Image 1 (cartoon, rainbow over the protein chains, first blue to last red):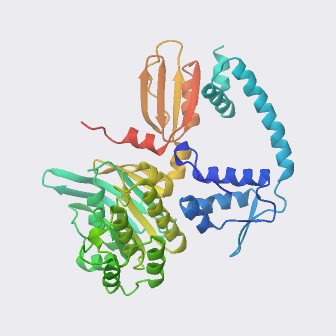
Image 2: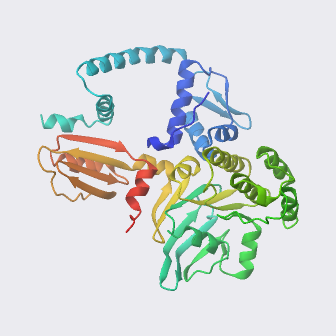
Image 3: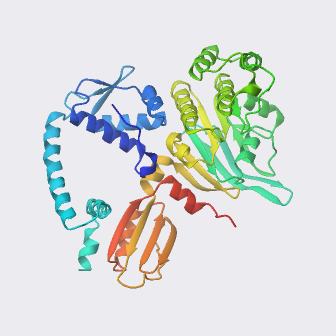
Length: 132
Length: 299
């Protein structure tokens, strides 16, 4: 279900894992109430630090995405937003797709598009505006 | 982290004649961590490990393992009893078979774990009847690792555990370490010059260079806090010194200014904006870049 995180992305591995679990729930790969792999087998399978897996699970629990039942393991919360989220995401994806298509049409490169998105998310665009 | 550290060095120094191998190294390895000790060849890694194991005496400062003095003969024995060690050359008795060396080693350790021995014999698919001298480098490493993992140690010290191994075996070795830490209460302190493997399995790292620690921290924190800010200007980039803390390095080239920082992205961006750049990019930084920016280059 989960893929090996990429350490050289510069994104913390526990965040990559959290994203993957959320994505798996959103796509329906795992459903509410279902069990997630234990910390040890998952660390072994992905060959990453068990403390990192534990941290990802703790954060996911904190966000209400999963429940950690003592001794029993990790389970997807019954109220985790599964399918509904999927629809929302699908809608969002088509917005992004539209924007990317238009940018490509203006021959903005993939790398530039990625940076523009990153800058927008980081709230950096004000710096650009001031110089316009 | 109120628990006392498993390994702790304070201003550790070691000179070989005029050569200063360690020049005030401070380490704190918390219990239960997989701790990466990253540095170039000759940075002082092996000297440090040997001091921890009582094989080399420091010239200054001190080293403690399990809270015990590593430099006193009585406590050093107590440390070694609780520590598994795999040396870089995987010294083993060449004339013994795999089975013989396992039996031979087990006899020395009252806490020997036959269950782990059996697990790793199967997992590593080691040929019991084969003589150690006829083993491939990968197999030899696995035997050394089996011997270190099965002795019921609280601390595992590995000196360049994967050097000279092919990628498939590297992954197997890393997997064994990760699985072991997940199922046993143990701390791993391993030296390496392979950034990728430290990045993959360690939760904390010290980068050592010229006998001193240059970067220390939880790897996830380094990933979260280190950033490169890339500024482009209309004309020549200004000669400016940022006042914000956390600046590691600033490079000017033509119209661009590139700043590597270890923390405080917001403050640097604030300062940068005052310089009226045409564009500001914030780029995540990998452990590899941190390493290359902080260690000294070849003369």
